[in-house]
Length: 274
Image 1 (cartoon, rainbow, N blue to C red):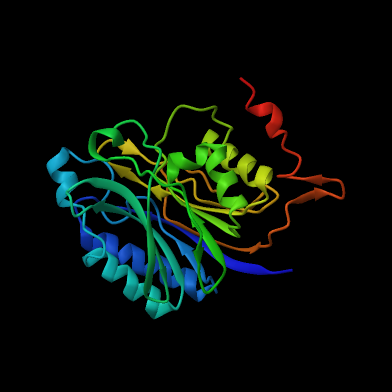
Image 2: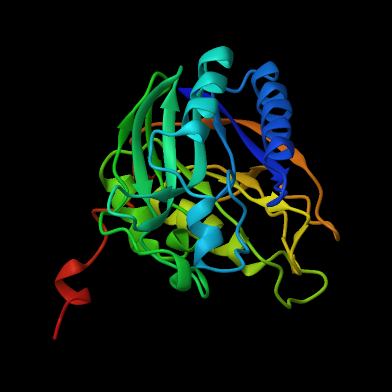
């Protein structure tokens, strides 16, 4: 059985204090690496915060990739000899903003993914990416990336699995919304279902605390390919920093039973009838 030790770093992102963000990243990534994790995920927009006052602030907190934040994250990836995935606020050379994620392998920038499904007020600041998640061949295996609202669409998870992803990483910022007091947030159940449907482990890194009146769930979780949690979540009010580590089983076997296959059983001849 092939496994990868992965980690989800749930940090408190102080939008007005970049040095605090850097300190939180360093301490959490170090702890995860010390625990043996070779693939580590940080939250969505981890470098900038989320609740921008206006477009000018969003632009000011963004960077052309590679920039200073990219360099900082590269240095961490190199120092701890890990694959690191982090959300980042990107500004293109044309001045367009994207909620993006960068993928780093032992200090090398492998690529960037731009969020394709924007949630609520994100549409005021960002443009949507126009390319579905791809596969990044890393030192630990084939990794794909989706961001927050992306993973609520089963097609995104399915396409990543069909392309051969061994692990799907998901930086998120999940705001707290009303739910039954004895229940996990619905976003977690959706992710668990999609992982099971397509036999694909998912590593979700959420943020915690509060930002400008928005409370964050703190729903970080590592989900195995059977859809069950391997580590996390620990839903608290208020949410607090956490580090979740687990060994995920990776292979491209989509068999569910001796006579069932997660992909081959799909009746695409019926699904697209007009």
